Length: 108
Image 1 (cartoon, rainbow, N blue to C red):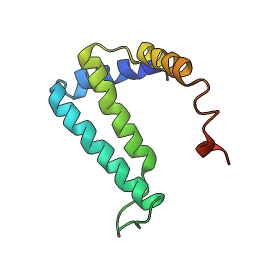
Image 2: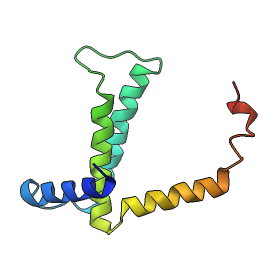
Image 3: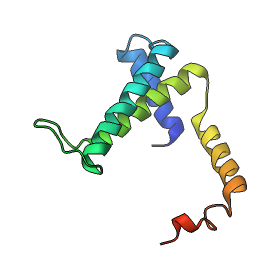
């Protein structure tokens, strides 16, 4: 599935099952909540915390939830995420093409 196809699939789902998009501000709050849920799993899986009884290692699910809300926000605000991601990669390539290669902190 491409990013464009993902944006279209989310839009179809919202129109068929979701009644309408939540407001942009509500979705921003939901996005923040979902990032917090991912942070919780990361802290337990890769950090010093352990999973509580009944909690599960659902890293992929939490990432997908974040992507879902981000796709909603992109649809609501008219952002083509394919184009924006391509522009971001180009920007980072121009800006950082040598930066990380010469970063002593990243050398093993």
